[in-house]
Image (cartoon, rainbow, N blue to C red):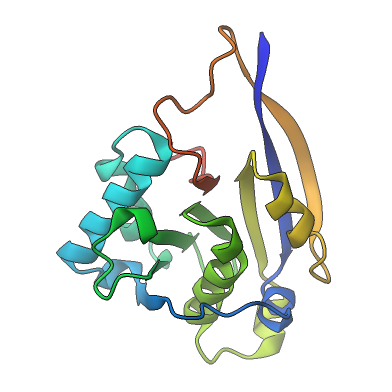
Length: 196
């Protein structure tokens, strides 16, 4: 096997993430919605951008990610673009957060797009996901993510108070080729492995 990349799992409390200082989106057009309320156009942009970043089309898996499979599961979607209507895939950054049960961990991913938007995307997801929730409620909920091959993102995340690295390991392949064939280098955080 040959080293084909690195995956780093990180976690912190939702309250630490909400309180962290972060950059704002600047001139970006940002849309943050409940995953189950995504319009067809928003869902299509999400799937198309994920395909560009990941190298394969995962429409069914993305639908399952947003819909959930258990009572109490929730998801949140963020779309950010320099284009007025998010139609330019090259300028589009996307992110999804999912929580499978009340008080369960919030898993962030996939996130794809520009590295410098990772933290604003993540912050927007968690802020929308918890709405006007009490800080105490957020202290007890973990936020988790798996960052793929973007070590500068990992370094920046580890500066967040309360953020810690769960593990880091090489992504291996038998032929030395990247794990994600035909991807464009903008796949920043993985979808939960149970979904692909």
